Length: 78
Ligand SMILES: [Zn+2]
Image 1 (spheres, rainbow, N blue to C red):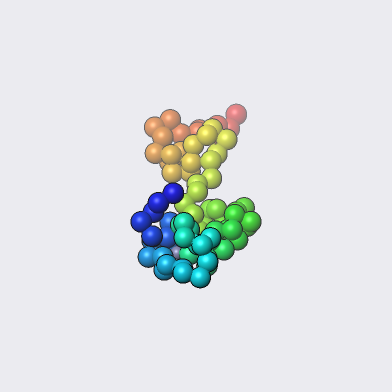
Image 2: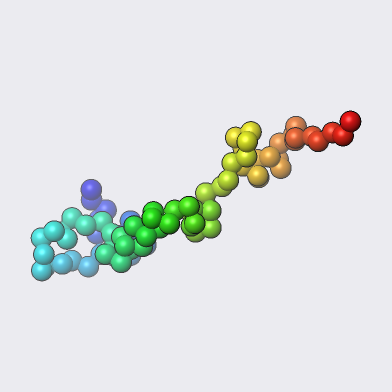
């Protein structure tokens, strides 16, 4: 994968490493990659806050979509 030496996570330029060959084709900063790994590990905690994942309701729509729906769920009392 060639990202033009820009980190996929933060978009900043990656520094070239001359020490180790293994970093020649890297696409993330080491720190950014560790952040990603941590986020994946804690995904259930950060998914809805850090990332823009939206909770889906039982009808398969997000809260926003439910609000905009022309036929919203109607609660009736018999
Ligand atoms: Zn980065």
